[in-house]
Amino acid sequence: KAVVSTQRTWESVADRISLSVLTHTRGDKTTTFFDGEGGLCHIATKVKSFDVFKEVCVLEKDLEGLVSLNGFARDPSIPVYDVNLAKDSALSNQNKQTYVPDLVKYLPTGNRDEEVPSFTIVTSAPQSLVKYFTHRMLFRDNPLGELYSSRPEFFLILTARSYFHICCGLNSAEPHQVRVSEEVMREMNSKAE
Image (cartoon, rainbow, N blue to C red):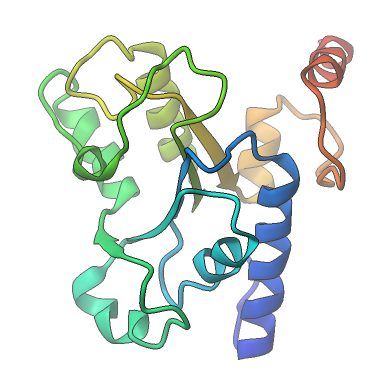
């Protein structure tokens, strides 16, 4: 990971992430967007300016420690919630059947079979969080889980190592600059096998 030290660099990275979300999202005015990066809320502010999603929210990993940092966010109308997805994944691993994650109380209701996602999340994701989301998707019949009554959309920011582990060693880490159809995704997956 690179050390991000200037305001201009933060904005540039947030712009690239936000444009990638805009390019590839299946969300619309019925979808809630969650910026899991928190901090200065650059991603949330940029995504809100696109006017694609119904609501834009921030999930702050350390609300107590960074409350003053959120105060510098450009748009005070964006709500900031105290949700730490990495902590939720660890606690869920300890209590698989009974743990209720903090995110549940902020999620919109929806239908798991809907075409348009109920919510979209952008967040940094170590392998443990990817495993957590995968587990939650596989066992979404659990009414205590956050994916029980909705269709999520994830944009995960991964280290190169995690990305190559997930892709089983594929040699291209470059993002697609245009929207990829489901047919193209299936074709790429069949070539990878």
